[in-house]
Image (cartoon, rainbow, N blue to C red; front, side):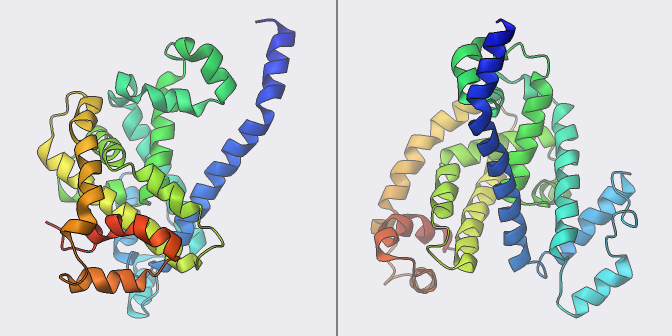
Length: 293
C-alpha cells in the first residue's frame, strides 16, 4: 500500500471510527445508568470488589476517592450505594483487571474468538485485510481488551468477580461461558432492540429490560460453567444449542400462559411496553419470570 492509498483509506474510515468511539461511550454510559437504579442493592458486591482489588494491589481507594469501610457501612444503613462517579472508577478498574486476566490465558489464541479481532476494525479494513488480521502483532492484546470491554459493558463491574467468589472459575472459563451464553440466546440482538427504544419508553423501564437480558445471560453463563467444562470448541457448543434454544423461545408463549402463572401476568403488566412490541417480547420475559433452577 502506498502512502497515498493509506491516506485515502484512513479518510474513508473517518466517520465509522467516530461512530465506533461514540458506540463505546454509549455502552459505558448505559452501564452506569443501569447501576444507578440498583446502586443500594449492589453496595455489598461493590464493597467486596473494592476490598479484593485493594488486597491484590490493583486499586488504591484513597487515591481514587472511594469510600472507606466505615463510610460504606454508613451508606448501607442509609440504604445508599456508590455514586455514579464512584461506579465509573470501578468500571475502569474492572476492565483493566479483566483485560490483563484474559491476556494471560489462551483465550486470545483461540480461533473461535478471531471475530472479536476482526470486528474491532472498521469495515473497509475487514473487507480488504481480513486474512492478514490473524497475523496482527497486537492480536492477543486487542482480543483481550475487546472481550473485557464487551463483558463489563454488558454485565457490569462485579460480574466476573462474583462468579470467581463462588467457585474457582478462571477468567478464561468465564469469558468462554459468557460468549457461549450470549450467542446461544442471541443476547446482543435483544440488547440492541431495547436500545432502539431510546426516548420511546421511560428510561427506567428500558434499564429494567436491559437488566432482564443481563440476568438471563448470567444464569446461562453459570449453567455453561457447571455443565460444559472443560471447554473444547466454543463454536461447537454454540452450534449444539443455538437452534434448539431459538425454537424453544418461539414456543414459550404456548408453553407458559399468563393465566396459569401469576408471576408472568404480573411481569407483563409491569412491563407494559407498546403493543407493537409486546408480542415479540412476551416469548422472552415469560421464561425470565419463572423461578430459576
